[in-house]
Length: 93
Image (cartoon, rainbow, N blue to C red; front, side, top):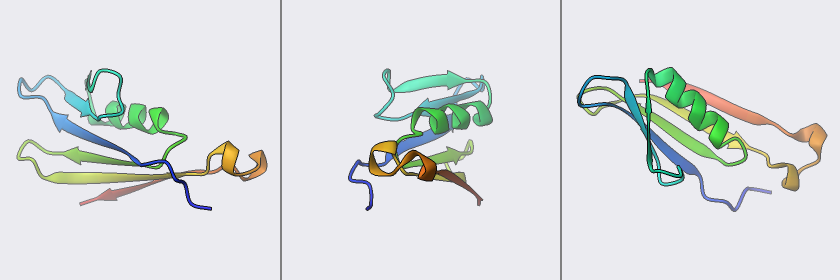
């Protein structure tokens, strides 16, 4: 049975002051978080959305998407614990 929860959407964008990246999403408690590297921001988004479907887009300085991470999760309430799977797929553009 497909999940009825909306997917979490995250954007990882370089900061204008060139001091790391911002992780931006409506599902974050403060809307935006600062990270030193894109990998750390993506890791947090993967962890924070582990029970939700998610899309994580990484942007370059010009505003182009350079990576997309897709996350599909089977929540424990929707399946027995032996079938709990979390999948992340990385697409580098």
